[in-house]
Structures are given as C-alpha cells and as structure tokens.
Amino acid sequence: MKLLVTLLTMLPLAARANSVPREPPANSKEVKNVLAVFAHPDDETWVSGTLSKLAYGGLKVTPVYVTSGDAGSDYSGAKLTGQALAKIRESEALKATSALGLSIPVFLRYPDGKIDRYYSEIRDELTSIIDELEPIAVVTFGAGGITGHIDHIYVGEIASEVSRSETVHFAVSQSRAELLAQYATKHGITFKVPEPVADADITHRVDVSLRGENRINAQASYKTQFPPVMMRAFADFVNGVPTEELVIPNSSNQLEEFL
Image (tube, rainbow, N blue to C red; front, side, top):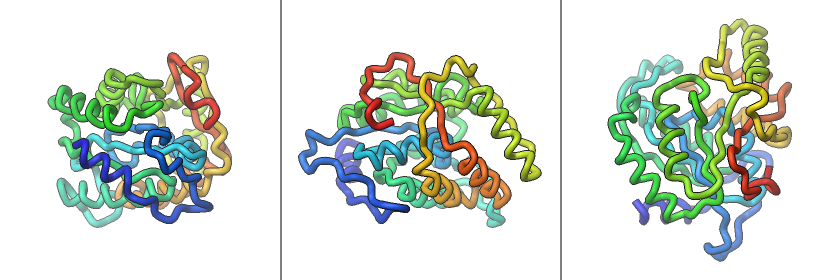
C-alpha cells in the first residue's frame, strides 16, 4: 500500500478546469498533504468546492474511496450492477477529481454496504496511508454522514479515529438543507437531507465562488449517479449558493490560510 500511495501521489496532475492549481514545492518534505476519505465515488460532491479550493491554493489533496459503489444504482440507462458498475464509477471518480484539481484517487475496493464487516482492515489501510502522506488534515463525514447511509457513518468514524492531524467534517446545516430542498423543488425534484446538523454546529462557511465551474463539471462526471435533472438542479444551486460548510471540532488553524 505504501508503494502504491507513493506512486499515485507522484503522478503529474492532468489538465484542470479554469486554470492550473498552484504546484506544491518540488521537495516532498515541503509538500502539505490533505487526505479526503469517502465511502463511495461521488461522495466528494458534498465538499467538492472546498477540496478544489485547497488544491488550487497549493495543497496536495488525495481522495480515498473505501468502496467503489458496487451495490449502488445506475441512472445512466446502461443498467450496470456489481463490479461492472464499480468499474465505471471509478472512471467517473477519476474524471471528477481531475476536474477539481485533486491528486489521483486511491481506491480501497471494499464491498459496498459492508464497511462495518471490515472495520479493522480499513482502519489499518487508512493508517498506512496517513503514515505515508502525513497529511495536515483529514477531511471526512461527520456524525450522521449527511444522508444517514451506514457506510458514510462508518467511514467518518474510522477516518476520524485514525487521523493524527486536524480532522475536518463536511456537513450540511439545517438552513442549507432547506435551501437544497428549495432548489430541488424548483426543478421538480423531491429532495431531503436526512441528517443535517444544527446551524450553530457549523464552524466554517467556506467561500467557493471561484470553484463553481469545477464543482459543476465534477458532478457532471457521474452519469451513473445523477440523472440530467439532478445535474441541472445542482448547477443552479452552485451558482446561487457559493459556500460550503465544515465542522472542525478542534481547529489547529492548519487550513485557515487556505479556506
């Protein structure tokens, strides 16, 4: 795993939307890494603007997907399931993370929907990645996992447990959840965030207005996960609400200059 992570993080960044993220220093010891840990490809959509902002600010942001979404649905019309779907979702994640300016992602490929059965193995793998990259922050789900999905909850717990640096939870406040529902209704969609957090729990509201195009292009990469109407609703929301929300329980100010 250590060799794999080293090789992945050394690969050059592909061409990015809008402009090119500021390159980290050539000396690897000077590179400031951020690790973003998700349950499935497309989970980064909740925090895509912030991750892109960090990358364009000069940090090396590496996404880790614990599963590849093999138990998910396919809204592309191709009726993919199982490993065929997982393979496509990984290719979608490569496109999405490239659009955001992130480093090439790491896929751990644990079974979707069964993360609780592999808790210790996942913890050990994430620990190895953290040992290798020594990130200044670990970004992951907070309590409730926004949607209440059991994989989101377990991934957030494991990543938070093994983090040795600043732990950053991306979240949706009650007010933001209401805005999301309003934008969805505008496009004829019924949408509700099952596990919003109290407005008072949000510690950071990040201005991601300059990363709107990156966010829209990244989400549009997931044709298996978002039908066209959801892509239109998301683009409308991005243009109307240019912020994202974080909960940083014990901020050490490691990320302040980049947010």
